[in-house]
Image 1 (cartoon, one colour):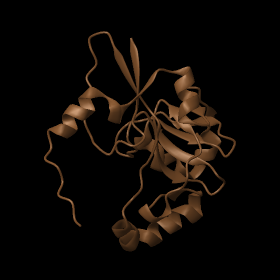
Image 2 (tube, helix red, strand yellow; image 1 turned 90 degrees about the vertical axis):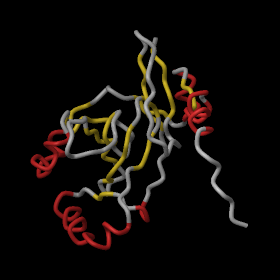
Image 3 (cartoon, one colour; image 1 turned 135 degrees about the horizontal axis):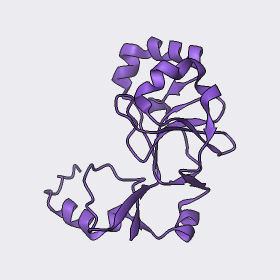
Length: 175
């Protein structure tokens, strides 16, 4: 059996172990932004990268509004200046490990950039010419529309998440 789990608002990193024979598919969209300290330290490097390749990595002060929901999950790390997004598919965005990188156009069509993100910097000169239509993910206008097509569980509402959060002491409140 396949279980679809929404991870859009999850800030916690934890494992979800399926029963034997079951599959877990994480859903939603997350923004993988870089901290302001990186922007202050290396901002010109990223600005130069944007000028050369049309890829604008996202920093904490520039998070875009996302107007779609994905099955499986997308982790967006960059925009292209044309209303499109560059994201990893199903895994956290990482250029050191082999995860698929996809492009979501302004028209909200999906394309595969590469099946191995670790090769991205070596193909960045011509990344747009490498785009191939990709049906490995589906985009929906809303989470509710995705839920109509898939039985998606809200991770924060699952028993495992509630038990996990109950194991941490309550954070003190400041008044």
